[in-house]
Amino acid sequence: MSETYDAVVVGAGHNGLTAALYLADEGWNVCVLERNDKPGGSIRSDELTREGYIHDTHSTNQNLFLGSQVFEEFGDELQEAGLSFSQSGKPFANVYPDGDALRVYQDVDQTRKEFEAHSPADAEGWETLHEEFGRFAETLAPLMGQPLPSVAAGRTLLAAARTEGPSGLVDLAQIPLSSTRELGDAYFETPEAKALMACWGLHIDFGPDVSGGAMFPFLESFTALSEGISIATGGASAIPEALTTLIEARGGEVRTNAEVTAVDITDGRATGVTLADGTAVRAREAVIANLTPTVLYDRLVDDAALPESFRDRVDRYEYGPGTMMIHLALEELPDWAAGEELSEFAYVHIAPGVDDLASTYTAAQNGHLPESPMLIVGQTTAVDESRTPDDGHVLWIQVRALPSEIEDDAAGEIEATDWAAAAEPMADRVLDKLETYAPGIQDAIRDRDVHSPADLEATNPNLVGGDSVAGSHHLRQNFLWRPFPGWSRYGTPVEALYVCGASTWPGAGNNAASGRLCAERVLTPPLEERVLETAEEYVGDAAAVVRRRLQ
Image 1: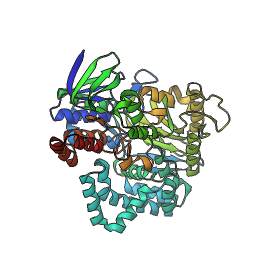
Image 2: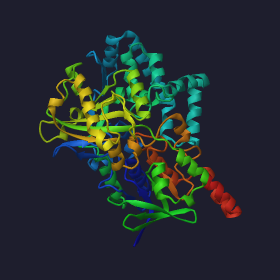
Image 3: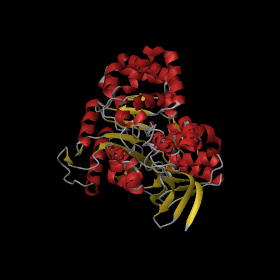
Image 4: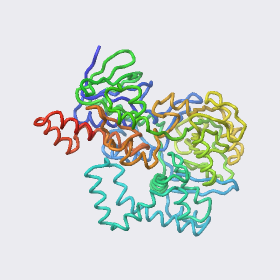
């Protein structure tokens, strides 16, 4: 049995759904195939602890999606489809062992006063960085929504150079290309302020001493300052569900429990996919894979369809350290030692210092269970009260960073070297650490649900080794080099096979940019590709080879 569509999308994460939406909006007949029981990928919500307690299973902060071009273009329809957001004007804070805290509000003046009370020098550094962020947002931030390389990106850089001047542009670029330790040392005086932004780096895979690690903290800190933090009201699944509604309204199909086992290739061209039950789903124009390189090329694409040099690049693709998710059903929100107001913040980071982050990151990279990993505590019901049917609360804890494969325990306490046995004792360690900052939290726990790095990969194969961002974002594998040098524009060596998702530019984050950019690539190939298509009519195979290389 076979079915035929204009395009087939493999994987119903938000980027795959976004690509399908843009194609369907242009009149294409699109089918999205998802192996799991519902769409969403790493943006989903589930009843993980108690009936009616809705937890964001993986991602929770939806600022990037709310501020995306996708939401700008389709926001009215998405809201009609049931998508809404709950916002916190108290986006994030860091807590420290001495009972102190640093808070960032969606209020410039209030945040400045917070810094001034802590350290006038830190307040000055924060203000300077805020000013630099304004320059960056005006000149270089548009690159985050443009393909690299591209004419549009070139124009953005030229405009930035005209605005800032060459030397000004170089100075501005130094900030995001710094490590988070370098950023903190350059702008802040106290260890508390230096840790404030460094914690954001470990949301991705940027230990404090990794060059380029300052970009995400720089962007996220000041976006939170201006926009707060938003989560999907009722649960993160509201995003993929609304995208699905828009696709289906345009005649497209989103099919769950439909695992793809092969990309079908004929004469060097992707012609469709085969499902686990043997069903063939044909694609007239394109197959789009919302998959990481190793999942796509190691599992679904025949080696014979790939040049050996490209296969070597796949083998060199690197993943970052693992992540653990702990979901708690609580009697009450944490009673933070650093102040009652902290229970109202969307995120609370527990590091506590830059050296702690460096130790944790190094341990994870070397296969050791960290003695004291960083905790990102998401106080979901402080932002969205609808998540529980009673007076209880849900807490979202992301543990960063952990080894994908365990060699030993840095503390010498956990003997297990497989995650099936190590997950619960590691979760106990995490909750013991949380208890020191929020006394009484363990007594308030009604139920808990623990997802180890191995569990994350089992839920979503793109999260290889529990890497929650689908591949390292270090400089050698970012920007023009994501996922591979020469292949940053969503094409592959296989004609009509395209890729999107966190493993492609602009990387991790819920801005849906790669899904949109991939769809634009399918709909309007780059100028040089169109020229070569014309040339093929005259010079044949030689032009075809060059065209495939440009993908």
